[in-house]
Amino acid sequence: MSDPSGSSVRPRVLSGVQPTGALHLGNWLGAIRNWVALQDSHETFFCVVDLHAITVPHDPRRLAEDTLSTAALYLACGIDPQRATVFVQSHVSAHSELCWLLNCVTPLNWLERMIQFKEKALKQGDNVSAGLLDYPVLMAADILLYDADLVPVGEDQKQHLELARDIAQQRINARFAPDPEQPILKVPEPLILREGARVMSLTDGTSKMSKSDPNEGSRITLLDPPEVITRKIKRAKTDPVMGLEFSNPERPEADNLLGLYALMAGLSREQAATACASMGWGAFKPLLAEATVEALRPLQRRYAELRSDPGSLEAVLEEGRERAVTVAEATLQRVRSALGFLAAG
Image 1 (cartoon, rainbow, N blue to C red):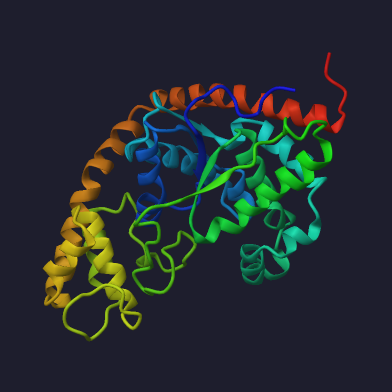
Image 2: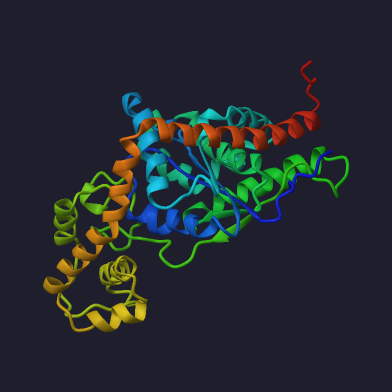
């Protein structure tokens, strides 16, 4: 049996974002900015997880366009296709096949206890799909296909990574690997994201910024024009206290907006806290808006360049698909063989 660790000396990382709604500051600061920093020290695979996007009702007229937009934003944020593998999940059929194979060994009660399923199922009521229940298995397939050493996770994804680890170790390796020293699937470790991993809503400092929030004023998207950014920040929820500060549990909005300013302006938290300690909201919000507009300007310029040359973007995704297929098919073949499937002639 081949060694699932692969030949790369650098640890391998896999992550992805759904192409549902426009990417926002939370996606950039909490995930993609960290991916950019990993490119030189790790072997990186970044996919647009479009199969996950249809686990909830979606607009089929938007899916392909949103997929291209998300891929272009990856590159505009600094993902370099010469140093990272960038691809679309549905372009690699091994994701769907491995998901089915893992489905057949994953206990149902493991899925029913997933917190995000319970939360989303409550919102959808009778319209909840089997895909919503099952998408953590697809996520496990995404991770395990690429022999990922590390998976960047925030607090809300830790349970999903634990499921992937349990499936790999308990349901595949322990049951089907003839030699415990030669596992079929690599068991990945979490990569805890650095500061900036949690960007909170502009309308509720206790809730994470989210693409699914029906209030568009709750988030700043990476493609919002300057006037929209300024308007959203002007309307952001605040409190009646003078001066901004960190770590006061009674002032979640102050903590969030001050933290956002530090990130947008390239300041340390200490520098931002000192500069804004006696500042009122009326003076602070224009400062935050200006810093945000300037931080997003080069990203938006690069995005416009990429979308004006669709052939170049599609070439990046095709090259990424070819690299991804090579790795994914090798893993899938190990699982097929271990489960006893007849090899194709």
